[in-house]
Length: 395
Ligand code: PMP
Ligand code: GLN
Image (cartoon, rainbow, N blue to C red):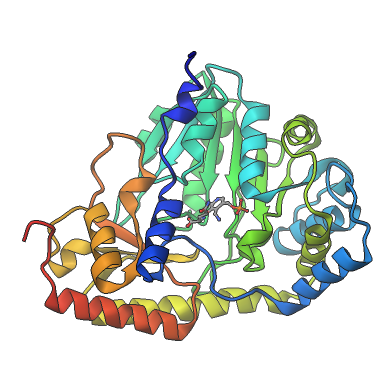
């Protein structure tokens, strides 16, 4: 038989699914895949449920319902001072993942170069390559996760079509600072390129800091596409409502990808997301505050268990250095080991690097958007395991 698509068939099952499946089989506490263990805010669930009962339950407009698109524009103004025309510059998608796919399909011509920063979120590389893009990877490494300006400039060329930037960044939990964003903006302008900005963790930034979209930097408004997710902002990852803000010339083409991929997004979740985005500032401050307290809790408990914990400026995640407890195996071994023997699962950071990079192999990521009792329990199990168990797969 003729071969199937070579790009997609070259990738395995995503690490998030694999680790969640293993955690479930083993009855382990799942601190791997990033999702809260609560049901999400009841007021939003009520709006969504009422919308199903009351209807309409038929195709909403392709770009999204007006009330949500107006809420997206108002949210851009309220938090970032961005003036956005909801009718020509906003679109609703079925999750940020679809939004990323739509942007890449719409902006890339086969052979275009795409600058990507490693570690990177699982769908970036396959989607860029499936769209015909040529990935140009720039690597950040723990514990400092510095973005090297020379390496970044070297990744840009005459053929660069876009950079795909994730800030706050999964899995490093880094929030790119103004100097880094200015450097990226300068390179984007210099190479007449675009920036697709995955900002799903925009409201999950800690220590009194605030997220600054690249789109707000001089010269970036007309070159940036900004992506958000109700899954993260409202702690309901199963809802799969994403939203794009982009200049109208770009959005009109991105909308073609959406038109042919999903066409639309469940209307009840759109209504509830509109309600969510229109909530007072308190909601957004509380979200960051509650998650910051959970970060502190897990960080303190893992530090007490003897692990070296990396800085965590935002997102759902913190990472540890497994060598700090004398573990000599790889990050993948460690994640298997703790799932089986400590009853806790995590994600190896090597999974966020392209094939064969092989450099970052002893850091693992834990997700802390869980109940405090679950975090305490997990840390206690890890402490017990690390004090009593062999430190490597061969010991
Ligand atoms: N981008 C990043 C960086 C993520 O961590 C995730 C996972 N939540 C997504 C995109 C996907 O978001 P969604 O579930 O809205 O598709
Ligand atoms: N964003 C989530 C994470 O990093 C995973 C989402 C997914 O499994 N697709 O854990």
